[in-house]
View (spheres, rainbow, N blue to C red):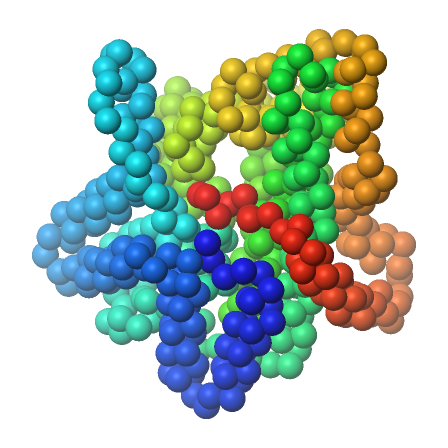
Length: 467
């Protein structure tokens, strides 16, 4: 495990931030961030820090070999892709492949039990983006190893993203500014993200975990929908919360990371949803897989194949389980459906209901331990008309006041309420500033509440830690 939350909040981050603010010169600040990042990762992964450092060194060398004046540039980038994906495959997917072969062919091969290095999917994709960017001549090869090391290992987003592409951050590594305004904004963003995780996601997780642990006979349509909605809110506030924390921490150190979520549950289609959900992963696959495959430039049939490949990879990237693959292809199917079925002139509310329904059902597959469990839960969502006293008592047990209030708040905040208030209901710029200032006042209160909650032992690891 990585740093415990209270150790991070009370010791590690304050110490790093104070030292960063005191140290003169950007070179010294970068060295401090590198040391802090390595300590951060080594605290929970003392063995696999060697793997991460090997990956960074390897890709630093391949970046140099892919320079515009180097012979064999194409071979270098191909070898880099093979080695990076191969390393990811060994540590993340070897057990899955062997189990699948055993099931399909009826064999009894030994299934390797390899512990998954935390964050390997994220730092591998970041390293690949650097080498590919150099090969495409979008950026110059970085001769300063320390800058490549900082780019890949930077602790705020090392463990669970967002995936920062090298061409988006290259200039900031060598030239950025830490200001009081950025620090205040970053701290506020961090607290908002922490609150999303601790106060909303963790509460939703209790209900989702309880129901998904039940047997099929104990679940009716009401309980199934409670689980589906709870998990849909859990995964959004869990991952968007972590992204907010990473963006906020980066801002406090002078970095500007791109947004990773843009109110995805306000989408009016699945295409719109994927423009808003996990944006860093979507754009990574678009830039480094979909476009190289030909994108939509080679006819409709090839476009369909390319999109299905991308969504297969998107699902598989999340984990070594058929549930993730099915979830990816499920989203790909609806993307293609929206592209080829004539668009209907329907009210926005109906479009929104359609998108949320598809997303919600998809996340049931994503959450399920097996495909069978996922199919069973979805079946209960649409046909579980069992209202016996036992079934209703199970459902009633989930409807605690805390769950109901938190779910209501989560639903409201999943829409751009703040933007609506400022843009639609407030015409005065001064009033908008007051509303914005209130959030700075509320932030310390939320931080205290979160720390009390964490001290009470109610913390659950971030979902995306295992990816």
